[in-house]
Length: 119
Ligand SMILES: [Zn+2]
Image 1 (cartoon, rainbow, N blue to C red):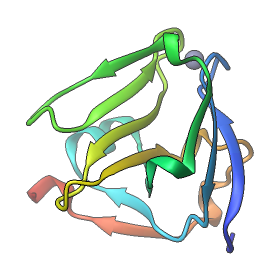
Image 2: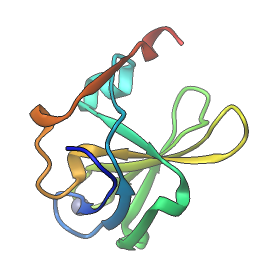
Image 3: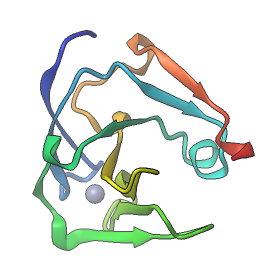
Image 4: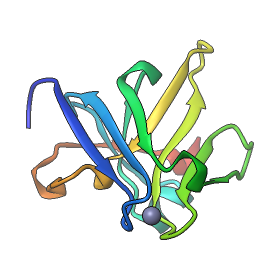
């Protein structure tokens, strides 16, 4: 995949739906506890490139560690769709679970290793 595209996606049961604009140039393969246990691969977007289209009322928040990252799970099917956080410079960022993009093929993505376990 290359080039900036408008992509749609959502959780497993379909309550939570989103639209985003991304080139998927940077997708994480992170070894931190939550990415490992959930099999998460994130791509990072400015909030303006991510629109929640459905399911805002179904989202459940999960916080851990420094509670700095607000993980957003579908309350029905439990899939983590995205997370909201703040970059070191203070700007807001959306971490999108690329596995939630419609029709995504993880094997066709270039993953960037992140040593999140030791941060
Ligand atoms: Zn769901």
